[in-house]
Image 1 (spheres, rainbow, N blue to C red):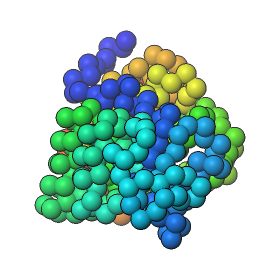
Image 2: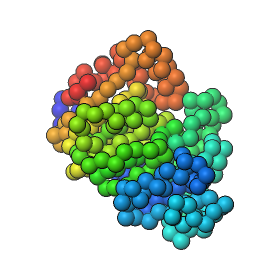
Image 3: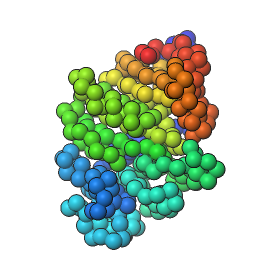
Image 4: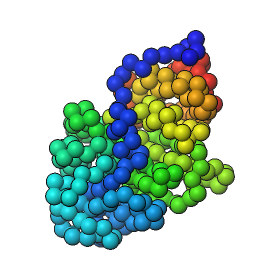
Length: 292
């Protein structure tokens, strides 16, 4: 290691749970509907990607959606999915996650907004998500996270539409969905392997994702749009590991203008124990071999 080497003090998400999140062998989309483009599109993308794992929909109103079997609940499915995408409102998200924990789901993505960034009631709902995840060992991405796109393995656990592309070896971590969309859509000749939005980082944070990419032999470069670092000790520990593995870490950090600082003030409400300001971020990265 290096003179500034760090120890990983906080408890990370397990490697098996992260593998289920990024490379699931089976998936279920909860709350999907044939009557909504937004809720139907995730299912259609499995066919477009050529995903070879098991796929199911969960909605008690239907028996089939977009050519995939649909079940009333996770408990009524003939298999336990590795990962789930929860397309339900805030009030129903926790119940869906609790059922997932009961049947043994290893990973979940929650795109829904209105949690820790939306006052005391939302913060309480997010705390319940954390409790369920910690008790079950589940890797939960979000809330407020669009999800995971893995072009290298032809799989996704993602709410929004995305382009099919020839996979490369550059992974992207973004705390903002709009920024991920802009970076992935820029015609710069970058061939992406993964595109991730981590949202509120209630459970699975940028440090966990960074660790996964450091250990993934298909990833050679790691890029990040990082608004605030929730777990600085582990995040910079993984940056050290990336350097030791010969993988450049390239970070875009907002906060130099008044407008972006105003945005960061809102982000700090949902990322406790973080590094958010440019000044504190610069001090923390002074001894790291990062590209900014």
